[in-house]
Image (cartoon, rainbow, N blue to C red; front, side, top):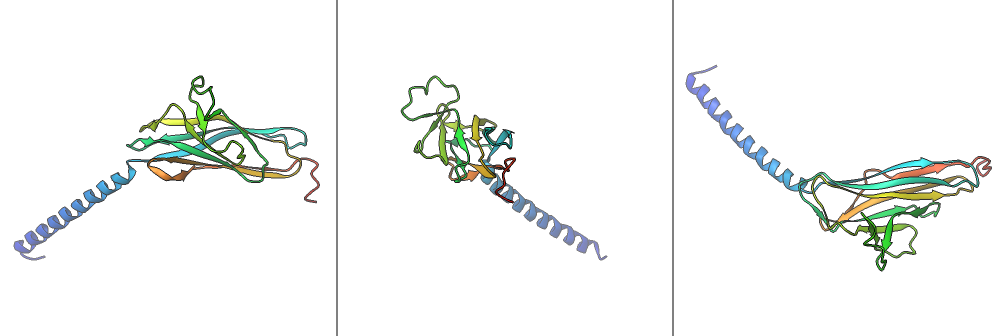
Length: 189
């Protein structure tokens, strides 16, 4: 190796390098923390009742959940549930319209904020909640997607979450995708 002076010099250089690395790690950690103050996830849960026979209604019962796993609240939250454009599905859920007198009677009520004649997009906001605080979960619960197939069918539902902090929206972790073939459907033969 070398003299004791060379070893001391190496130790001093390593300490300085280590100090520099620690300083950079702390800075990177503080920058990363700034980006994770608001961390929201949204997802669907659902169950299906499918007959695969003509004349029988099929349906999915679902809920859309928004969970704040960050350290900062999401304010003025609203969601968009988008049904595929082929009009296979009939969507219904527990929501009221802007001029409805029922708002105060429904616990955990949601209000539809887009055109009620639109059958593909359902823009909804919670009536009683203005903020989704850290560790809280908010759900648009127990909606129903119903269809009565006449042949092979396919359809989907996507979810998006918006708020003051995520104006561009955030897509749900999963979608609802449904396809099937009705017994006796000779279309594909």
